[in-house]
Image 1 (cartoon, rainbow, N blue to C red):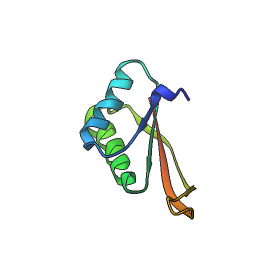
Image 2: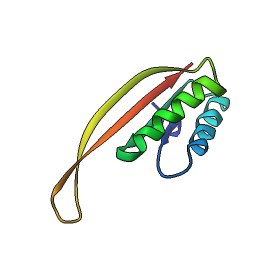
Image 3: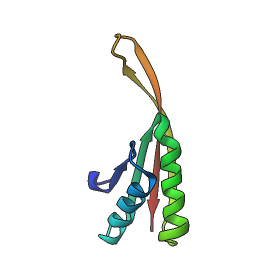
Image 4: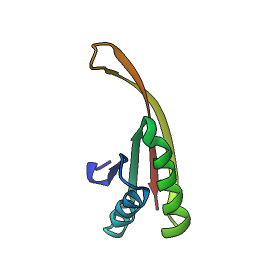
Length: 90
């Protein structure tokens, strides 16, 4: 999947990410990937649900994948962080 069709969910408001997804679809993207980690996972789910229920009714969730990534902390230890990728397509 093209990197420009990937929306990384962070600390902005939910509607900012909804607008980003809608903009990508309006620009001709057939498939959008919404990615998030840890606390932003619930926001990613909210974004996908708002887009498909309120803005683009023919956009469907085609796949959801979860994973646990291991990253190194500032103290030198390893931290496990959860992540999600929601794939939406027309």
